[in-house]
Amino acid sequence: MDRRVRFWLIGIAIFVVALYLLRGILLPFVAGMALAYFLDPVCDWLERRGLSRSWATAIVAFCFLLVLATVLLIVIPPLQRQIVALATELPNYIRELAERLQPFLDRIRDRLPSSDTPLPSNVGEQAGAVIGWVVGALGNVLSGGLAFFNLISLLVITPIVAIYLLRDWDRLTQRLDAWLPRDQADTIRAQLREVDRTLAGFARGQATVCLCLATIYGGGFSLVGLDFGLALGLFAGVLSFIPFVGSGVAFIGSVILALLQFPDWTHILLVVAVCVVGQVLEGYVLTPKLVGDRVGLHPVWVIFALLAGGALFGFVGVLIALPVAAVCGVLARFALLQYLGSSYYRGRHAPPTAPSDPV
Image (tube, rainbow, N blue to C red; front, side, top):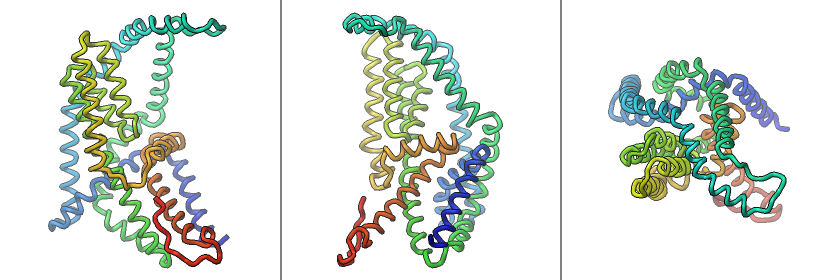
């Protein structure tokens, strides 16, 4: 094996092992890096207007914290009330839903041939078991990835890391560029630009889409008068970065709550209309305009990356899943282009041709 290849493979292996061993303390640093990456274009824009990097960083950080604090002060109190009320009313909703579903299950059981393992006769017990499993899973997540110490460090350390990285972003990129191997520097820069284009198109664009959908769902459900509509809308909007999951949570959750809450079909249809409006805006306006279709991240690849990152590194893995997926996608396309232009694909005696983009 070539010495350079062995060097890079050993370096990558050491990086992955260190990432796995330090995954418990990386959350505020990864979050700070992500925040700095999102806000860096704003600092660059202010620098082009004549401000120094330090002043641009101070202004951007102050405005971001001010907006964040304002939003939290407006959203957190009603959201907290809705979450507490939902936890209180959830057993009643489960009981009422079980009572409504029981006749349908009885009909299905009567039409099926008899067997040694009949359908459950008590939907409430089964629903209780499912809810217990969900609560246990959420407890494991909260005790593992978002423990109290990690939450405090996230709130305190993340802004500090983000501010320092914003201030030194250009200096850090220049330093990393100087460390690139000289023979492959141009090729690596081209791939890094492609990675940045992919992340900027997907991560920044998808974050904006999630924010817009959270506003549409939360505001729409609240205007219709749906109980816990704000909490459900915000939750569905946040989950919209996972393809099809956010829209599914918004539709299924809102329809179930509407059927349990409203006695008339008018409010139920209004809830469905909010979901349809959100889906239409996402599919035909928000995603095409803010994300685009040339970012190179297929929805199935995104879902796999998020699940794999969460399974390997917990919540930190979810945060780094998209950057890693973007890097892997860019490197895979680059490797495929090299293969299509090589003799392994064309054969030894075929004339050399410039490979075309396989994607």
